[in-house]
Image 1 (spheres, one colour):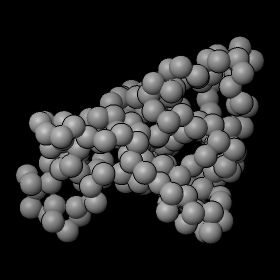
Image 2 (cartoon, helix red, strand yellow; image 1 turned 90 degrees about the horizontal axis):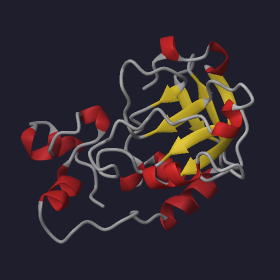
Image 3 (cartoon, rainbow, N blue to C red; image 1 turned 60 degrees about the vertical axis):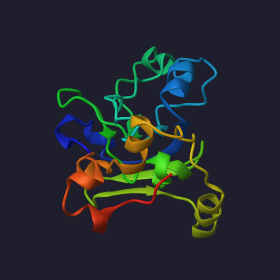
Length: 184
């Protein structure tokens, strides 16, 4: 999902290298590090902030522009996340990527430096790596954290649906059986 009216027109078709943050803690720890390998052409990617990874799909999709770029006048960049953000927020931000990274969705396989192409006219967001490399990454993927043995957090992690399905529990919607994602 991208709110085109809030995006910078020159970024609606953009190709750039990924700068990946593994989760919200990684984002908070590194986004303003002067040594962060990021340029105005970079695509900021936040993984593991969706319904399972957040948990709860926090309103964290409006990734901040790194301070070192703000200091040079950069006011927008392409940002991609499996999180959500307020409808009043602005910028070139692709949200609700699903399935989310925490369950092995597409963002789980993005690495620093990978080329990403956003083409809003074609309605595409592409990770530009070879099929063989993507297959290797999928085969090596492991869930980022194990769920507790029991309790609400376990139930939530195993049974919450992805963003396009409403982030509801699968047992509360009638179509869940046909759209159920594999568990972590």
